[in-house]
Amino acid sequence: MGSAKAALVTQSLRKQSMAPLTSHWASLAVFGNKPAFAEPLHVGRPNLPDKQAILDRIAGALDRHWLTNGGPLVTEFECRIAEQVGVRHCVAVANGTIGLELAIRALGLTGEVILPAFTFIATAHALSWQQVAPVFGDVDRVTHTIDAYEIERLITPRTTAILGVHLWGRACNVEELSELAVERGLTLFFDAAHAFGCTHHGQRIGRFGACEVFSFHATKFVHCGEGGAVTTDNDELAERLRLLRNFGFVGYDNVTAIGTNAKMSELSAAVGLTSLDCMSSIVAANQGNHATYRRELAGLRGIRLLAYEPNEASNYQYVVLEVDERAAGLSRDELAAVLAAENVLARRYFHPGCHRMEAYRGAQLGRVPELPVTEYLAERVLALPTGMQLDKSSIAQIAGIVRTAVENALAVRGRLSQRRAA
Ligand code: T4K
Image (tube, rainbow, N blue to C red; front, side, top):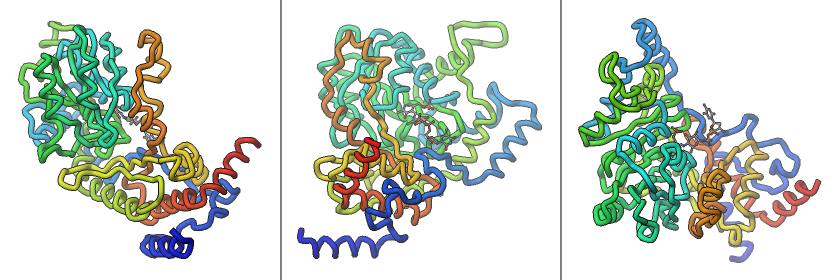
């Protein structure tokens, strides 16, 4: 593209933007200017649209003198999640990680379980804490979810299950995984930590496989502060999950299983219920943010914004870029450094892939598996801030910083290496 045309394109993109953009490379904070934002912008700032409603619910729990162990708020939270997902059972738990552990126990899994390496480390840790060996598979280049074709070669006589992860709220290839699981006599269950409120072929995530596990951590769009839930249509499994969640107690004095304490408290449920009340406005804010990022980053070389399937419901809680260094002229890490200087704390989720984490390198018989797509993504992916903390003009400003950095990659790269050397 000639430089006059490039200037025109840039001009028209700027015209569409919601706020004045940081347009000249010399105005970037890496060149010694004031950061664009006075306060740090985090990925995962909790959405708290109605503080008073949370406080009212907590006051009710305090007045009842009933703070945990199956109080009315947890029960209401479970009913609302089950209803929304369209399953018979929701078992609320203290967090998503312990929800996965309970599921692994309740499903009686042993030996090895196949999961994607491109996920948050909790997916792997939950297996390890239950003495089940995580076997890392690669993911699909486009969907970022486990590659069903890859799994076949990882199945051994010790394999008992496949654990799919609906990364970024985008569903795994549920049909292919189900077919494979049935064919090979394996249990299939899902880490749906990112996927509350999302659908697959119009059906709510939370109803697939033997069970699915949600996270309601503070960084999730709907949250309890700390919280999680296991959803299933299987009555027996639900009963087992409830038993294990409460130390294995049946009545006051009888313990029939080696359980744990995985209970959600009333205080967490108070936050969760209020968050559920506000769910549609949170999703609308996230969706609007995503659309603004899309508009502001359109046509920028080397920058791909992960799309959400327009025909599916989504929570839009992650804004994920893939940075192609060769085309952008900057690596993902260089772009993250430019943003950090502006007080935009983008995250390298999920770098470097679970299989390369120190805790797992030794456990793989000294051999780190070759997972080319995971490596590819772990070097390129960058999550940007979103949520109710941000208005359109802030989003446009963040996108403007990305655009300015990429359009002036040479100068920016030079400056970053100067800073590193200093
Ligand atoms: N499976 C998957 C696929 C998951 O992604 C996760 C969790 C799990 C399982 C396990 O679910 P949980 O057991 O967590 O329920 C964060 C979250 O802690 C974690 O829940 C989430 N996934 C993961 C993707 O992101 P970190 O270590 O990056 O979070 P952290 O604490 O650094 O928070 C991110 C930023 O958010 C902070 O830099 C500051 C800001 N923040 C955070 C909190 C908690 C706030 O501003 N206020 C806050 O209260 O893992």
